[in-house]
Amino acid sequence: MGKYKNKVLNFKDGIISRLYYNLRWVYSFYRMYLGRILLYAFIEIMRMGVDFFITYKIGNVVDFAVAKNTDKVIGMGLLYAGLFFGNAILSIASNRTAAWNYNSMQADMVKKLFNKVLKADWEELTAFHSGDLITRMSTDAKTISQNVGTFLTTIITQSLMIIVALTVILVNDASMILVVIVVAPIIVFSSRLFMRKIYESQTAIKKIESKETAYSKESFHNIQAVKAFGLADEFYRRINFLEQDRYAADMKSNMYSLMSWIITYLAGIFSAIICIGWAFFRVDSGAMTLGALTVVIMMAYRIAVAGKALLQQIPLSLQLTVSIERVRDIINIHNEKLVETVEYEKFAVETDKNGVSVHVDDMSFAYKTGRQIFNNVNLEANPGEIIALVGPSGEGKTTMLRILLGILKAASGNVYAQLPENGEKYGFSTETRSLIAYVPQGNTMLSGTIKENMQLIAPDATDEEIIDALKQSCAYDFVQKLPDGIYHNIGESGVGFSEGQNQRLAIARAILRKTPILLMDEATSALDVATERKVLSNLMKKDTKRTCILTTHRPSVLSACDRVYRICDTKVTVINEAEIQQLMNDF
Image (cartoon, rainbow, N blue to C red; front, side):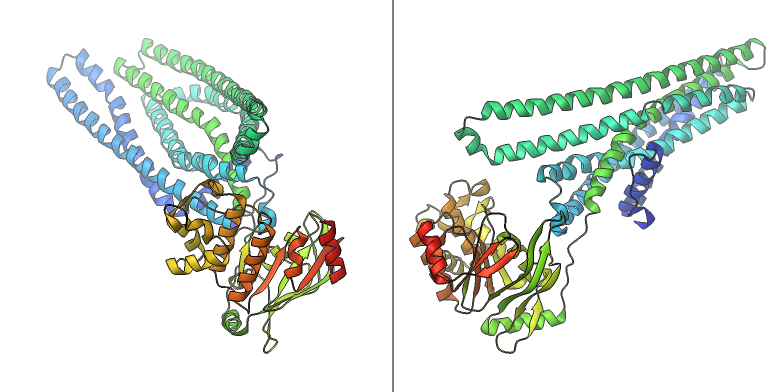
């Protein structure tokens, strides 16, 4: 995207400058479509040429009619019929090409934005609410793809129409150049009066739309809690306030757009009066024929229509630049560093023999907000072990798992996997995720059948393998009672199953990944103690080489662990059996 890729625009930059750089960026983004955009522009120019020819020849029709030249009038009538038919064909081709470009460009932008979100640096991405991301991927992407092709084409064709029509007027009467010199500055000045206000209003509208999407998403996700606490009216009151804000911002934008249009329109009428008045004066003085006057008036009309079309691009261009800037915010997020080396492939193969141990040596980490989470901490987990991480909420248990997953990068120290047989080491990163199966907090089941959810992790898994994983996670007890078994449909966010059932399904899905390391983040919090112990026992019996690290707030599971680390006040320390027993007693 050239030098415009990383151009940072400040609010103090002029509107014209912002529009220029944003349009340069978006046409660079859509450079593969420039040929198709120019094809659309070419069709529109041809259609405009037909329109112009129809208008231009009207003077001849008038002169032939005045001279009562019937043959010429009939000939012109047949010519006009052909031109109107050709214009209809070109209009159809233009509409079809515009739709082709719009749909292709929207699909391309949505896919690229979606891919960016999936591969973006996690910490940078969390600065955006998921509802805001959805709005930018849908509304803003649609605004851009729907208008970027037609915007350029309209500017080209309508500007060309004005130039050609003005040339015809000057050819018919060169003195009209004086009128142009008088009226042009009026039009230019009037069109720029409210550009800043329109831009600010469009920015406000987009922010409110993002807030609405975010609020609706959260409301629907927590609909059970909303009903349980009788909060329907309160949630409705809040969305009502957001709608009032959106309405006010939209009406303000509309008002500024209308004011800009009215002033520019009045300036155009004033200019037209000057132009036509001068033309009539020239006819009255004998310097211009009636047919030439007709051409001048029609050309002036063409200029007015083209000018109106260009004026309509002002609010559209500002809406477009706001959407482009919002999309650029997402595109400019740094990607995770995804690498895959031959050395890692060899290392990963070796882990199949005896598993792999996890080591954290003198590691420190702080979020970009400045909050220190770890300070020179150590941790170790070996094949065949279950390691627990305990501690107060927000102290770093989940953060530790994110570092092992390569989602976050340690500021200092070493975080690595090690082969037990020869001590070979490999640092944890995005590359080593293939060694890890992960069961995150919360409900992670997707809409679809149980089998489809399982095969999301293991596409080639057979029914037998899926059932075996369900048995290990103690999920098959309830799955086999379902009418469709593993083909039973799961509702959105696991609707239809309890939290504990969803957790067992998520654990089964992780088991199917068949990795040497299993990370579980509060993954058994909704299970009863007996089921929780059985699940952990099954995990280690089936694969004695597995390295399991789990976070928990429930001490009842700690007696089944080989080692327990307490995470608190930026430190990670091993606690002894007496401390574990004390935690269990306190619980």
